[in-house]
Image (tube, rainbow, N blue to C red; front, side, top):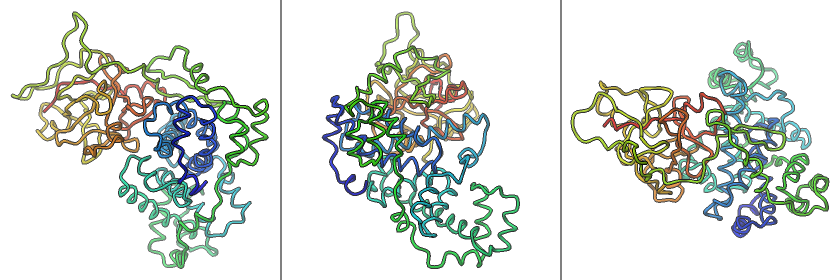
Length: 518
């Protein structure tokens, strides 16, 4: 892993793998497995599910590889899928808790002393400063942990800043801003770790942490930081501090475990030859056990087909995809796209709602789309199926739900009104344009408004394919470039998520198409 990976031209392998070349597919997986494992391992702080998330990511990569239109963008495409799978892991973990909790509690490691980094520290006898950086990372917000994981790979030369921007759906400049904010929080947490480990410890800090359970959390980070910022004793630990990027370069990458290689070999993702090419020291032993003679395995596409060939569960129940020993819930994949936007109503069916003409505002919009699972072109408003009276709107750049009624002002009505046009990336789907000319798109899994920059990525991110929703007359909007993910409202925003299989999720991902309020 390193500059060799970043500078390598794997477009030829991608094209060959897309054409069904098993060996090319295995070479790609072998080449990128260490990078993928380090991103996931660092982002999840060595959680016990790291191997499962890596496997899930590779299964999705292999499944979706034929649809990748730009082979040269494989690396950033792989990273973007990895980020989504990390997010899905967090969501599944929170759902399995069966309660609403702050993310810090949901992400706690059952045995903090058993994290991957701890073993690395002991084996490599890392310097105290490097150890503190690793420990400080556990105090970061979850999104900053992921960003640090990516920046770590950038420092190591495995990813470029352009790769990060493409994977996150942001501009290079915006990524720079985010990295800077993450680094600021990292420096803050480095101070916290050093202050807590000081011997003797600041007496006032001892008073501050009374009642602390010893586990990193955002609540205690803020409390401790309020003390350390103004404490000359605690701030002494920041003197002559080595920059974090230099320390990260001295930390050895996480080694891909033999058990994971064996699991990938058993699924047909790696052969003994490919594993050896990846430089995995114990891979040939594990893969040799799983394969006769280390030959190429049969195509994974057949295995995926066998898994998904059975009838899907209902939309509200979700569907279970089994990956090794890990079963996880995902939103059912849509059927092959049909021209839902331009569909002609069947005989006897009422016509789609015509666009509202100018004139006095009606007390409320009426009637969902008459054609199931479609969004008619023209001015429309999207009402939440599970929160009647709440509509997709926006505040500054970000989409959200907002209340609107007959007494609402013109500005509120305008913000819940979108012009539905044919999909920028697929005319069988739809794109939504706000009154100010910006388009609704997903970026880093959150929906926001952006101007058209003319890029293919923008067109893909701004294209959504409607399907029937969980409530009669409603629709779900599937992301064109991530067919398994749908638009959903949660936590005050509008996000792109994979289902957790609950009825609540199905309701949050269903919208009723109404006549425009403005």
